[in-house]
Length: 267
Image (tube, rainbow, N blue to C red):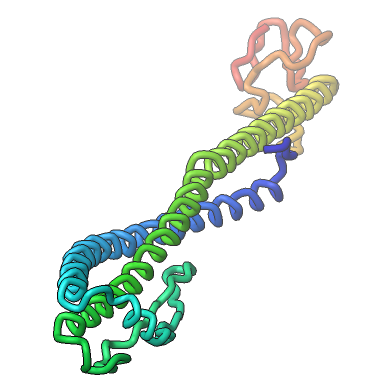
């Protein structure tokens, strides 16, 4: 399969194509099974017809041989027989495959010769060969149907194999490739956003540390300590400011050399 851009649109399109390919494979497999079942039934019928034709041919040639022995050569009588055009041809469909239907008329006791110079052996010969004709028409129908079904099964098998072994694996591999690329892009985007967020937070901390005398907690509380009576230092007694006097509280409270602020801070 040609190279495809790893986009979400192509991923959705290939997923639809994969669904259609799987559906087509199921239909081809079902069609193949139905055609195989139909062909096996026709093969069994063809075997029965072949055995019946063999026995009918045997009886017909035996009757003809007997008629030739009794009446001599029956060539002139055979040439007097009329042309039989009672065969009709039709079609039926099995999963889109046209199968012929050959219809032969039943034997009718119509003799094309007189009773003078003939006997019952010739009548029996005529009857047996009419049966042979009807069985041969049926056998031709069955064998032609088997041949067409076999060709249709072969085509369906090739298409099913192509879908199962070529088309579906290609679509599956392409979907896996596009999915992997898209997931990698999402991970890269997530990492990039984390880096940008971390840089922004670092800039904010740097600006807060550069403020004189007062650190972040004071700014958050939006108020300042108001003298030694302040019992809890909102700065948690951390040295957030530099450059102050030795006895200067980080909150800006002036203390004596031996005096401790109310929060307990000591230099």
